Length: 309
Image 1 (cartoon, rainbow, N blue to C red):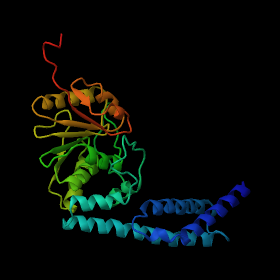
Image 2 (image 1 turned 60 degrees about the horizontal axis):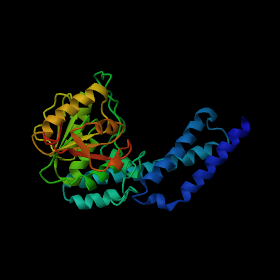
Image 3 (image 1 turned 180 degrees about the horizontal axis):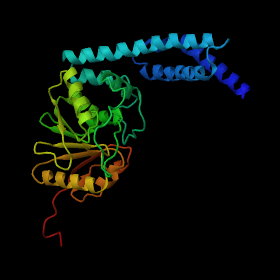
Image 4 (image 1 turned 45 degrees about the vertical axis):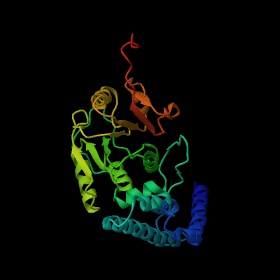
């Protein structure tokens, strides 16, 4: 037991030496690397819980705390500067996209990209929107509702690149959670976006966030997605917010809208497999029928009655 503890401390000291000597951590876009470094520091703090500040470990802990302050300050400055820039409104969608691209390995030419787990762009967006953790919910969820999960940010870049978004489109995020999808899509395209969410605490958070950033094109609709008004919607996004009968009910609602005007349904997560079974929708690329790929559906052409027999 003692030997393993000694090895752990030696390993942590080597890691702290590496972090202290890594000048690239000073760069703005090294957000992901700083986060990994902070995880090492967290391990030192965990070790301190059972070792205390005993001889030989006290200095290691003090070094870790100094690094933590430095790295956290660098992240905080990045998030604050990003928020301040967004509040000015003095940016174009292209400029913001180029800024976001610096934090992710995703590129528009990645055909059939898999979006697994977070990367630096997720860390940036969580920081700039001040999403440390989801606020406690105040209402129970039904059996068909899925608990809040964050959509990988690069999936939203994929959406912007491939969903043929037009200036007149109106984007709905169904089961919007803390609203980052609606906010990011609005920031990157300028189109009106609407976050449909049943949880009051989440709705309040999204409203406050949009207000802080001065985003007038982001609207929050506090409603059950089965009952919301979709009369002006043209793009509907779902990151598996619900399943079973509730998902089917929402699909029926969207089918009714699709009979009135062209719409697109965009999905990510396990719900894609269920949405692909909707006969009134046609997936643009069958290769995207995968829970970790972004899938885009158009309303399927009507079958002439003479051929429907």
